[in-house]
Image (cartoon, rainbow, N blue to C red):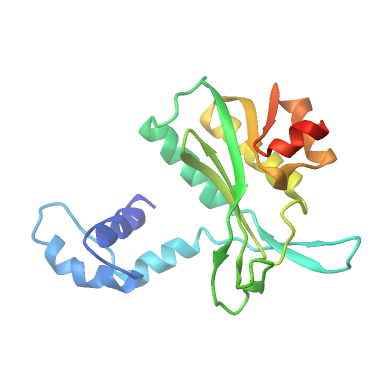
Length: 202
C-alpha cells in the first residue's frame, strides 16, 4: 500500500490532477535510483482493495433507506500511518472533534441535499486538527440519523489503533440528541457542544 500512496503523493506534488497523471511521471522517476512508480492502472487496482460495500439503514419514520460507507480498511490504514509517523502520542489524553461536511458531487449515486445540490455528507473526526476517521453517507441523510453508530465505530477504532484516551468529545448542534448524549457521556468524561443555544437547554 505504501507504494500506491507514495505514487499518488508524488503525482499530486508534481502537479498531477488525476490518477492517470502518474504515467507521465514514471519516466522521470526512473532517473532516480531505487525509485519505481507503478502504473496508474496498478495503483487503481490497489486502491480498489480498500473498497467496502455500503451499509443501508432504513428509517423507521419515513421508510426511506440511506447508504453509509464505514471505510473500515481505509480508516484503519489512516490510523496506522498516523501512529507510525508519531503524529499523535500513544497514551495521550485527547479531544475528539466531529462534524459533517457536505461535498458537492454530480456522480450517479449522489443524492440531492438540503444544501441545494447533489453530493455526499460524510462525517469526519479529528484530533488536534489531524483527521482520524471518516464515514461517507448519502447527501440527503439527516446528520443525526445513525450518527451514534458512526461515533461508536470511530471512537472504538481510534482508541484501539492509536492507544489514546478520548477525554472530551466536541461537536456542533448536529450531534445534539438524547441517544448520543447518553451514550457518549457513559463513555467519556466530557461531551462539549459548540452551539451556544444548547447550553441554555441543558
